[in-house]
Amino acid sequence: MDKLQQLTQQLYDEGLSKGKQEGEAILAKAKADAEAIVKKAQEDADAIVAKARKDGEDYRTKLEGDVKMAATQALQATKSQIEGLIVAKAAEPAKEALANPNFLKEIITAVAQRFSAQESTDLALVLPEKLQKELEPFISGELAKTIGKGIEASFSKKVSGGFKIGPKDGSYFISLTDEAFQRLIGDYLRPASKKILFGE
Image (cartoon, rainbow, N blue to C red; front, side, top):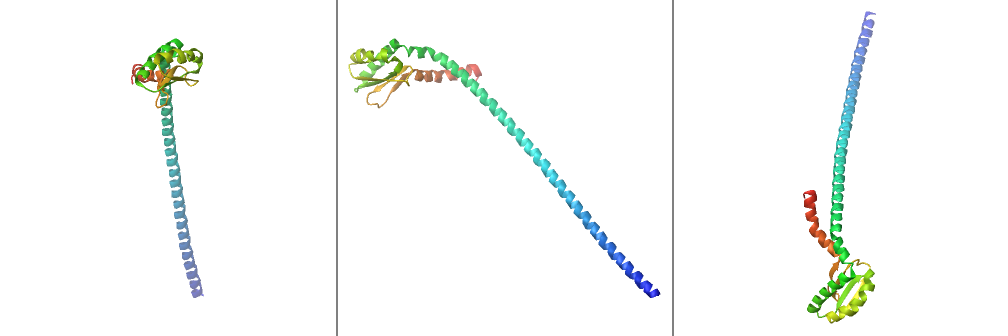
């Protein structure tokens, strides 16, 4: 009986010890797994926060850049408009003169005589369509007699003031239109106006 009791006790103790060891191993593994899960969750959370910070910084930098660019563009557009107004105002007298038939007759005669002395071919003129009534008789009559050679005139809506002149063969043209004068005045006036107005 004592032996049986002893054997039973021994089996019980061994089973209890083995169960306890297995339980401790399971508990240790569960604890390690939990720690790994917590660590991974923390790493993921840190990565999300870091990405959110970086995205926020990138967005702020982009927004600042966009605002600066918009401000620069608005300033440049305003400067250009001011320069355009100044150039247009300065070019007004030339524009008015180049739309005056009497002034055009004088300047066309002077330029055509120069061409006549240097060019052996007939001349071609392109004039404003709105001045056709006033200029057509002058071109075919008085101007043709003055330069002593053929001159062909055409009238165009594209020329609002002034004229274009050149050899009839079309090898080249000299433009004395109001647009050409405005560009010429603009080329000289813009740098000066920039310096005076904007200190550039």
